[in-house]
Length: 140
Image 1 (cartoon, rainbow, N blue to C red):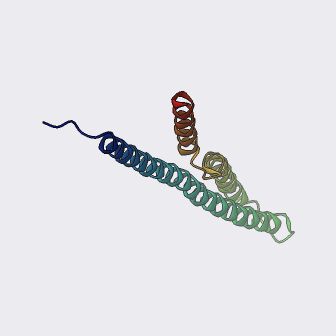
Image 2: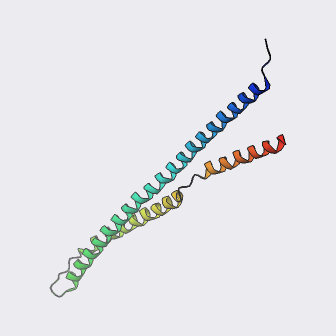
């Protein structure tokens, strides 16, 4: 058998390096996609829970105003001794608490999801770059 020529070995090595670099780039892109998807999901959760908080606060304000209307009716000289307004105030308070909890969770999801930057992929790309730079320095 004849020995392979140095140019053939060099071409094969260059081809292997090219394939491995291509594979690394594809893997980094997939990692970046996964990170951005995770962050966008957290942002969407925050938006949905924020909308729920707004809904609860709006309904709570409606009950509060409704309770004040009943209170005003009770205080007027034409009212009687029935205390209907306390039920409205209790319901409004519960809705405000639910809105506060939902608002807190929405803020937490927003902080966890913003900004959607693929930090892990960027860090990995930096490590790969430094590794290539070191290998170039060693060959010199």
